[in-house]
Image (cartoon, rainbow, N blue to C red; front, side, top):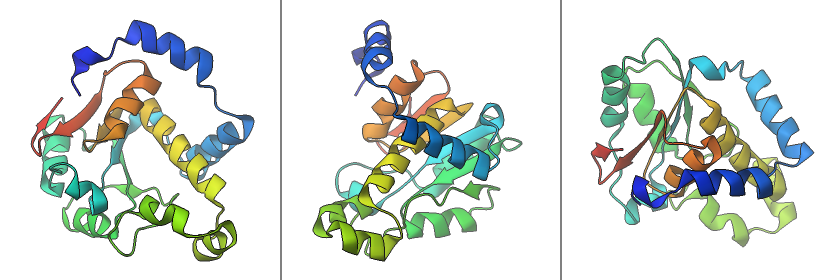
Length: 185
């Protein structure tokens, strides 16, 4: 994806007209914000993972995220980490970066990608394993994407979120996505 491929004067109108959060999603989003004491104006949202995504694209090392935080002089901001990858979480803990985790979605335990096995479990088994329904899980993913778009900065890995978060935000302003392992745009 290239920034030039997204024409925000068109996508902004489409998102505003057709992409409206349900009342339940808005309530879930507010619960996440209030429950985690998030001030979006002072927050940097990092969405990082590896698991199955590593088979599709070159992913940045954790040191590249921390270096970017340093370069942009964002260490005094509230750094929020969202990951479903337990290894990424451990690497961030070892990085020396001060951050908080958003534990809204379950961690992947088999490194295949949590969402890959989503369809393999029926609803009852999913609830039993993850203490939430599949609908709740999907709502939380959507709410986290919106939260990321609301934060002062959003840093994402290369993937669908690199496009979706700017579309929710309505611009690429302060949205940084790694590309080709080290370049970001």
